[in-house]
View 1 (spheres, rainbow, N blue to C red):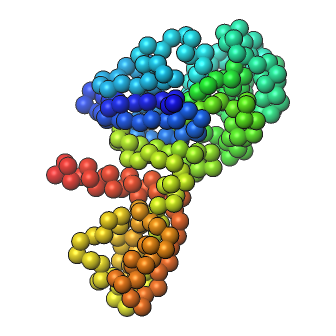
View 2 (tube, one colour):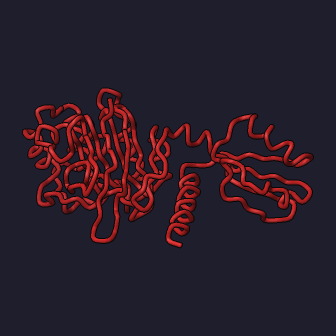
View 3 (spheres, rainbow, N blue to C red):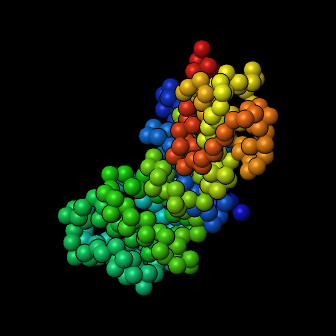
Amino acid sequence: MNAIECENLSRSFGRVAAVQGLTLAVPTGSFFALLGPNGAGKTTLLKLLLNLLRPGGGSARVLGCDSTHLKASHFRRIGYVADGQDMPEWMTVAQLLDYCRPLYPTWDEALAKRLLALFALPSDRPLKKLSRGMRMKAALLSNLSFRPELMVLDEPFSGLDPLVRDDFIQGLLELPGDDRPRTIIVSSHDIDEVERLADDVGFLAGGRLLVHESADALRGRFRKIEIVGDKVSAQVPPTTPDGWLEIRRPAENVLQFVHSAYSVGATESGLAPMFPSSGVSVRALSLREIFLVLARQQQTANGREAA
């Protein structure tokens, strides 16, 4: 079963297409990272999922329900923490928890107390007197305490210092399995921050989903390859082989490219007859590097369409 399903989902603001024909399925039980630069459409997509915006086309289902028909009973199963979201800042942390507690039948007071200690939050201090990072942790605490089935985090790390970011991440990672939300979706342009969290990754740019697959599969098939040998820069085949991206020739004897369909052993054996007596080095790419490659490919494709 999928926690989230989108089919040809679209939303525009005037002439700007914020989300374009997006089809996506997020399995129940996954930690899904929706990655992309600012303005990629990540926040719009999450608001469409939570019925904070209406789709211009297509459809979305969340926890088995059409997103446009979500009711209070569904929102009791969904947590939501967003950068810059409104909070009752006149309340203390304790008052915020007292306010939220009766709204959720699944509220777990023991879990709330454990999280309060983990986040080192002063329960008697008004939210308006807390730092930005502490307010974000208070928001996360008030959501995790009712044990949501689905946790939606929209740019939760934006503007937080490294220590607070680490505390925030530990609040998700260090919870025992039964205390953690079943499914987590986090949108972020800070790709390095979520690399250790995500098992499922989607890259969004210009409102388009560039790729969606497991983090392990992505890291497994993308490699930076460098070939060093006599005049190798002139030996690239006339027809670019499948999977070769960003071909560069920094010197006459150096050829570099990204391979998007790398296979251990098979790739090197395929290169051997093309570049005999040449040295081949292979380096794995981070999710951030992979995204940059894909985003540049999309920019090039968009330029061709515009021409």
